[in-house]
Image (cartoon, rainbow, N blue to C red):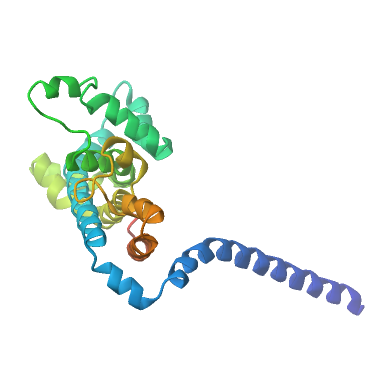
Length: 273
């Protein structure tokens, strides 16, 4: 037996493994090193001392509170909308699908400008609200509206996909037994898709928490009113770098926890009904 072909095959396998290892390491380092640099740029003492400053606490409280409110609104309105949308065919449905996905590819600054043109004091609708002394732009409400606009597609897409994948025989069986549509939805549809809906909600919360462009365009950057954590990072770069680094590290930790949660849900079958 000629050992040359065997040796050549082994060398090809080794070369392939080395190439794959270099590719994996290169991509991983490219993604991981910037994040690691944030942690290496500061020390624990500075991090924890800066963590208790008003600038960080105010931005943290505002981001968490508005993101929770935004998520609650998206779930309450988005869940029945996604169900009705997925269960019915109607003219223009493809346009509705496109509009749902549009914020995912729309530049955040454009989204913020669009909200401002609509709801600002001289906007298409905002001018009429101003007649009653109602102002939305550059308020905490504007932060919530911006978060909902850019983050809701994550939940709507997930919910719509789950409801479309759900075998209708479960609902049909319950319907033949006399269950009302609301009871079917609450006791059958939601429990069967719960894991997937939770994962979509987690992603929506993370996107709302990290929103920057639409917020600064529509809500401004007012400390304690509209200055969320990403905006505080931007301000920290111009003034107190320690504040910017501390908030950045907080966002990295929260984002990492969110992605871990989504993957754990996926492992439990979150995306399979």
